[in-house]
View 1 (tube, rainbow, N blue to C red):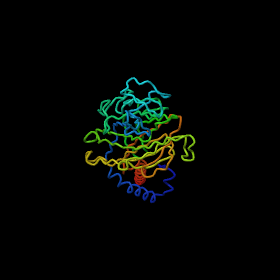
View 2: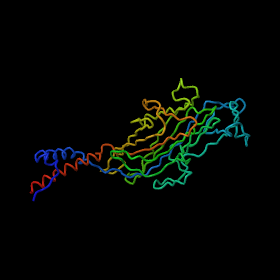
View 3: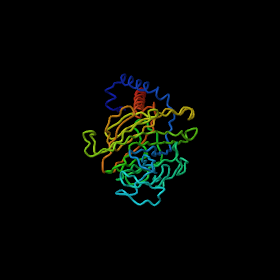
View 4: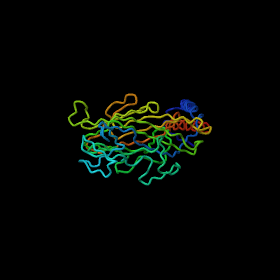
Length: 351
């Protein structure tokens, strides 16, 4: 009986085919002999909030006593003019814009769900913050627009706390939804936001971990906010749009890649001593923030993002868990190809 093989088998020839098969198997033998069990299934909580908000205008909170307006505690009572305070102890008048501000108005706090999200397999109940500081505010407004920063999505849903399941990537990254930020950038007068710090925490859980969970991965993000004015194009190319000048904590994350509307930064994850013998221990957490134009080339851990004037701007955060030092699927396919060649050679010898 005549055996039929693909044309490439005859083009290689018997001896060349044998050499190729052996080379492929040998080249892949090292990576397969050290294969370890991956942690493939995770549960996660991603939570974020604002702290250390500062504006550039001072108000007289009591005779002779001035304080810098802080959007975490001061919100406009009315967007077009001064209102009548309901409690003179809680409201102060900002003489520069004629508005009363409410001391203590902070919006929702991070860690509390207002969309019915459940804690699920994480075991953390709604309202218990994972952040090192405890709950932080997730909405801040300023000026007579007013302009606001809030952890919400385009539908207005609270995104200060997001939970779900994640898988480990080998090769192509698998992105998981994190928090989302909305900037309602409206024409506004004084006071203007100048600085804000964002704390972003990621808590990972897995039954493959000896402790069941990892320590909190928390990133501090310092933001300088540049509120431009309409005729300032000679100073800022993006005016009258505004910009966030963002600096990441250099001890925790480094910028790994960026494009026209995204920035990726990476945190290394060493699980040595946290998993049983035979498990892979080297991973990375890659965070991608996207949706705003990148206006300055990243330098070190600092970069700029444009936020369009008189618009609602959305900044999306996603993350991926990647195993480092694991053969990618393409390499595994090559290994299988080598085995196929060896099998064909054995069949040929038996004929």
